[in-house]
Image (tube, rainbow, N blue to C red; front, side):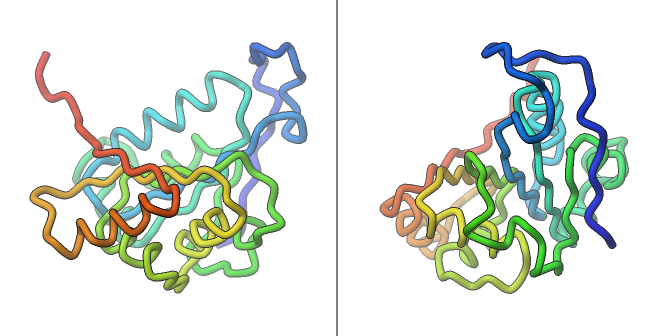
Length: 178
């Protein structure tokens, strides 16, 4: 797969009254791993798009692609269409793989415990893990929306390790009640 870029002329305005051109918007990397929680990723991408203030760079793991049809009525391609730029998982030469890629931070939603373990150990075997590693290295904000219950002692140790270096660990609690 190739990196895909979508038009930035969506007619939205930023609260700072700046142009919505891609170069004027804040870049956010969004990673989606295979844990349950695809609806939250969809909502996140929609909200970021609606503000008009963010250029989103999306990377999905294979497990995320497999879980999408089980959790939503959308395809992976429909979710990818919500992002400005979509990067293939194994494109280690993609812009987001480099620490020199200027962005405001990264959100992994949902973040499986496998992905959290890879990030905690610096095991950058794919683009999502490499982008997170670069985000940590450059001391940019990294937010992990973990989706696991119950958490094992190994999960807790990995999350604690990440929290101690400044990664934001946010439990993904979805409201299933009306």
